[in-house]
Image (cartoon, rainbow, N blue to C red):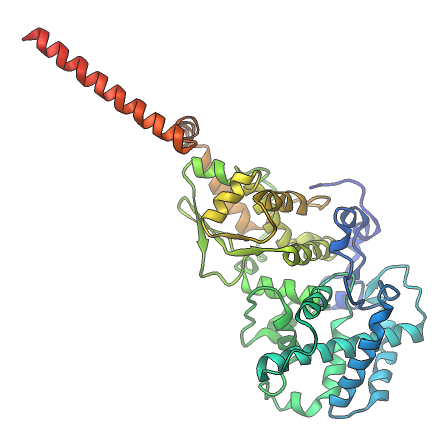
Length: 428
């Protein structure tokens, strides 16, 4: 991690960005900074479908499917007004262009409008197919693997369209169904997106009100992050200043030797919710696979570009990076049921967390995490806990050393008893 260094153009201009609703209209879709992208380029590059202007020429073979879905969406709509959808996007072209933070959009007005029109209709039809497949038991419209790859591509920061365009086209297509409030037949756009988001995101009844209160939604990556924070206790931490005092925390195995217990938090609604109770650190269950890493890397990149002062997801990654230094740390968290590892051996998990925060700016922590770190450090520095850790490390580090230590103590006790008996015999 870096606390300074040479920032690229994106990071240089972060302080110039607006916060809140207006920021949705000014630079909310980014190219990943080069120093971050080079660490794992394929994590930020679409695999099968391009969305928006950044990768427009990379997947031209998908245009046939896109246009097919665009036609199906227009035919599915109440208005069946192809020209209406196209005109809507054309009228918004200037505002749409402003959403892309780049000087390298070479597409002209008409081409950009065409790309956004086609991509938005494709996304909406894809989401509707996923929704009706889940609610009505419709057969899979595409091979399952292809569906998963498309979903993954829709969460990449470089592969986004502005959410307000999707919302306008969705409401233009189904004015009666959406105004009736009968979400069983047709959900709101946010609820339509939920099935493709990783993990168990529970929006609740006031999700639209919440999203409005935090400035609306910029795009899918932004939506996922905001729903994570809504489900998390970290939202409460946003009311307090961030702290810079914590620079180190012992690893999981070191803390365990010092007497800290690790338990899986089964009740948490969000994997960001670390909780310390006494000397027990509760960590929500997390599944690690190749898709997890890709989504996480894009969330981190988005925070580095847009939410550098409120980087709550980076806080979580740094917290886990503190805890995980070696394979033994990973093995401990797996043993306690906190991590489910689909990446391979424990070393892959260690490398994941040690590398995720590379080339990121991390000046401080949210107040909740900072409090946990301080308590862990204070507990770890107690002389008694340090002595106990030394004993465990020197005499109980493995099964055989534990057996040898117990045997040695047993022999010592026998020797003492034998000595006492011998002395008593001499006295008598």
